Amino acid sequence: MPELPEVEVTLRSFAERIEGATVTDVRLGKALRWPLGCAPRTLVAQAVGSASRRGKYLWLPLQRGGLLMHLGMSGSLAFNAGGAAPGPHDHFDLVTERGTLRLTDPRRFGAVVWSSSLDADPARRLLARLGLEPFDPKFTGAHLKAALRGRRIAIKQALLAGAIVVGAGNIYACEALFEAGIDPRTRGDRLSLARCDRLAEAVRDTLSRAVELGGSTLRDFRDAHGMAGEFQAEARVYGRHGLVCRRCCGTVRRIVQGQRATFFCPGCQRR
Ligand SMILES: [Zn+2]
Image 1 (tube, rainbow, N blue to C red):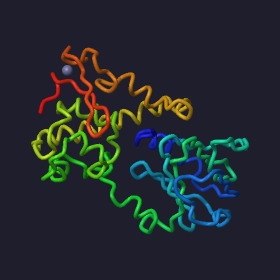
Image 2 (cartoon, helix red, strand yellow):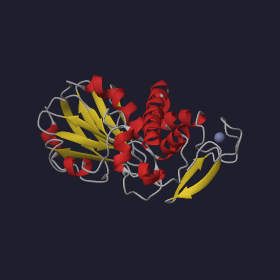
Image 3 (tube, protein in one colour):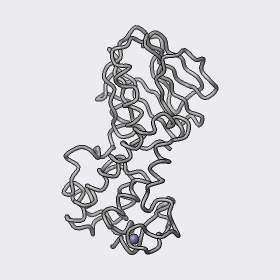
Image 4 (tube, rainbow, N blue to C red):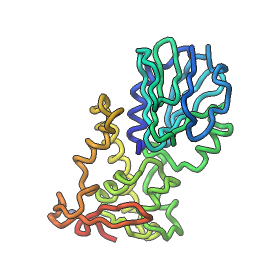
């Protein structure tokens, strides 16, 4: 599943190239998660503005409104100059004078939804519950500490929920908790400010590193999710259960929390 770093890498792959281009055609394939919400022809002749990301959503502004896009479980977006005909899994094409932005999505949980602005529905509703961006200076240990007040759930699950900070998906939450030395089962409200500081920093570092690695494997990303693959190869705990911890020579464990696998090192990570 595309996580925040993949979405960020995707954004960087086309944002500058498509900015200022005029839409010449819109092609729809099979139904995606939600309907487009406007007649496709109304997008034609509009110029594309500066694309941005919020959580795992991409926002592609046009002169009148814009398109909110999500890659769902298996989607990928690519901007290509060539005019290749859509394949069976290509369900949205935004054709411009400079090339085509194409959503390929075999499982069709992805979405392209028109909204008059980010502050109006449906965009506002879809983005309303998202936590802070991990690279937002407001995402600090103090913010984390305040958001965890009264939260009895395990810190790993609090991160995964995305309501405090976005982007800490399963791989990145496991890795960040390892970097911060925090047992993933620790109750959220039991974390000290100092540990919250370490965790906020670890979340930021883990995600920025994943974005960097994604940039280096962008060519293969579309087919193979090369970013996640590359990041996993260097993971400290994710997918390494039963193997020797790279820091303390203990053994990495796998447990299940909220139906998701959690990987951690009992030697390095404390409650
Ligand atoms: Zn260890």
